[in-house]
Length: 567
Image (cartoon, rainbow, N blue to C red; front, side):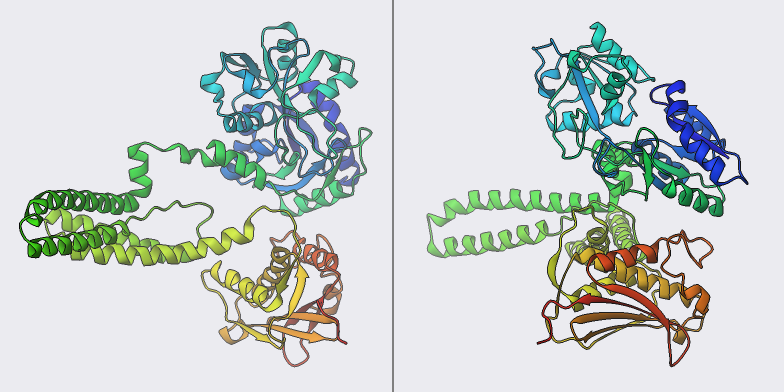
């Protein structure tokens, strides 16, 4: 089994850093032989493309690019002793020599000579670029010179030390690692615009991002991937304190790439007329028609004001008529302005968007045909504009529910109506599927029953249970695909039960349902129910499953403490 790694410090350092991982896997999985191959960024991408590696260890930036292009899937994230959390572990340090008093912060880099690794380097360039652009500095145009020196990253430190670069962009903690190895003195360098993050022990100039993941290639056997993930998660820390933990959320990396319009989001750079016309031509057509109508009416109003001014001086009746016409024209201008639809598609489109988008396209094509044939009338514009607006609002509602549920945010516990959380979770579940089953919500709670929870975490549990029971009834008759969600109170506890009418599970398998990495699905990782159990228990509750007493299938139930105890 071949493991490809990004050797940002060179081949020798890569071999030293990752040999403990190879040795642990070879010892824990003797049926396989694992080998390590080091690459630069381009070489690693080529190795993934041509199936020359089975697993990949790289930074979060290259991972999401390879995930989008080749279908890589992360199974674990590196846990560093230098950071308090694997989700906040990697960033950029922009360094200068300590004696450069003329460069005090990032804003002083305009017109300077700056060295970096490569345009696609994550900690060695991109994390710092985001901070520079927010200060109004474009490295490509505002630096006096921008040199990409390639790997190993120590070249940037050497260029700064020798004076061939005024400043350098390196991965956070590189300076500290080189100091521990006796290769430099930290006192000889200074980090620009330093940031202080609790638990992070290295100099830092940017925001922090998740640590390196290990990911499986698309062709890698799923059973082997699960076995490797299990062994890595149980691997003891190395002598340097590094270990592996469950896969982190890389949404922060997606946000950086989206903001810089690179990698999977490079299409956002299509800002020319041709790119806009190709991607957003229905919206541009409606906007152009609305703008043209506004200009025509604005000119007409100005002309009428000029003409009617003279008439107003001669007769009161003429003045009243002119005022009436002006009011009428103003109403028409306001009406046409409402036909301007400004939309931006983002995120992953659900299946249900096909129908409203197809309707929008049909009306837009109808307008083009009428315009080409000379039969375009204000009534046709009004009818098409109104229908397009309705369909756009429908599509927007679907996107809004998905976007709200998936957003990256801090855990916040608030007092929430439990029934509202359940109904929102059902709406999201049904909206994310092409052929959603019938879901019945039966609430026996008093109006306004409140729980103090993190709303999105509890909805995640509900959504996971709904998806599991839906999978349990796949291929069965429609009446057995129905799902019942029941809300009730017993003593000081609120209960949420999700019942299916599927095949059920033998007692031996039911006893292992909530174990990590145990799954009955051929393509499952076995983490969903384990994570749900952890979330519920973190909220002071518990989660369990049992077979239905009055028919086939299973019922999954979790209990949460009621906000007000029973007196």
